[in-house]
Image (cartoon, rainbow, N blue to C red):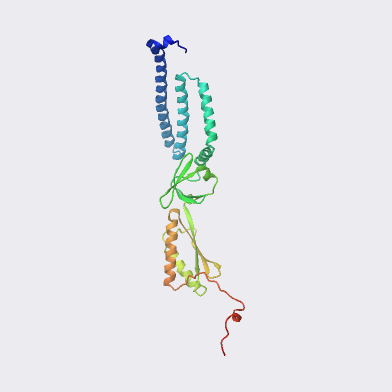
Length: 283
């Protein structure tokens, strides 16, 4: 709209021009805030419906976030329409902006895509104890671009989802039971049958072991410095670590009480011609 200098000097022209503009601004703000409230309410309703359908909590949260983003984009376009902006132009501008942001945030977008994969295929869930690329911890939450792990010493580690999908994932909580594998070495001079009987008694007394598969105690190896037993038995997964530590301690104490040697690594050194290097004793 073009105005002459005389019209600009006339306050009535200001009102004539300003009131419609103000009306459009108020309408745009009303559309934005009301639309934002409606979008949030819609997401709450949809998320509640998904939870009633017993959908995974992380997946429900992710879908709710995507739905809210789409609804908010529609609200913004509608608000721009109230300001007289062509909606087709607004869509083109938003599309161009999205492309520019996508090029600038390629790493984050790869983590976003990886987050979608993790949420859909669920290699782990909240509360699982996992090892991801050498980082061990309890899964606190899987978000769109990263997963939060809580380590055993209570630190929070934020792992990008793109790193997770490109690394090996070990889920220690996926199976209800785990096997404890212990290698127990005794000296060659120790009584093999007695050592086996002591180990058998310790395993029989372990209340956390599972009856099936049955525990096994076998001579695994005649090593350089020791005769090695392979002790194997199964426990419930939550009991694995404490049972492993307790059993290791009990074996050491039981061997000490029964005079069974746990040898140190030894190496014999033979030097040829050593006698020629030593001083000869007088006759």
